[in-house]
Image (cartoon, rainbow, N blue to C red; front, side, top):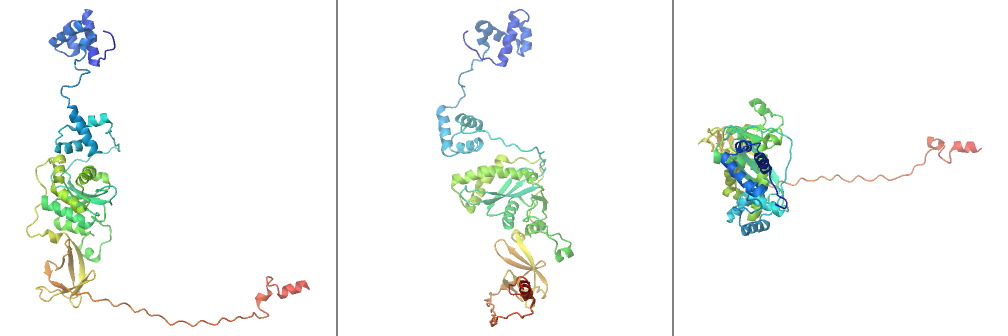
Length: 431
């Protein structure tokens, strides 16, 4: 045959074996053993080689389109739809969105199409080697908690924070959008997790002052033998949740990687739906977006036992997730709290003594409660009196002293200076 014939390594190996058979140095049994073929397959292949030569060893489908190829019209429609709506989406996420519109293709097929069109290019991120920590064995044994600041609603809008909790054993997640990673936002996120799954055994957080504090203990804490806690730490202590702090972001890599997924998928989902508010984002998260991510990425725990605890019937979570402070009762049974005067009424069954200490709780809905021990104190808020403006005392003006010009005496040291032109020293020198 004239021209060039492209042959693979396997085909060249068969050609060499069959040449040995033609020369009489091997029999077909030896060739079949050398090529790893059955005797009958080797006979068929050798017969084609004798009839067609080297072309008989080349695969018949080479250079021809596959019989399982997709329709060209579907390919063009998918690429056009990707350019219009899903520009920048990864192949995996784009195929999920296209399937919702009726275009059912595999993500690897879409990847090849996009690479052939020059739309998609593999982006490899290299990082230093780190050994991955083994997952915990039980659901609820350890929950990673962290906040992710990002421009979730687009480049032109300010950054907001996505508070995320993710189970270390299964990868089950829960998210809440807020303006900042505040104590109240973290309380609300943890409250949602407990309402849905139960009380976890431990939380894995960073060392932000929302979760832990490094302040010195107060006298009351020293007398009670308690460590200094933040408001969030006090909530976890009431529920028996241990707070474990990480020394680096890589230590809680599961939640950090989950942030990367949301910064890709959630941003694009918010853009597709036209959501630009925190309330709209939380509604989207609650109405199935998080559930879809859990179905796709969550795995089964190694152990079947669930480490979540049920909330006791006598515990009201609204009274647990709050801000607590200690105040002193005045002689008139008035408690001062953030410029508010709370009058403890006499109808209380347990009336605290003046100068005693009570606990003031501010719930997340703004309600204020007074407690002494476990007893709830009834009170009424006094109207704020208008503060009198302080009278500014202006001292009387001091009369200015008259300026008088005094002439130095004749024997003043200043007159004897050499810098004074009319001094006696200069006059003597001139004589």
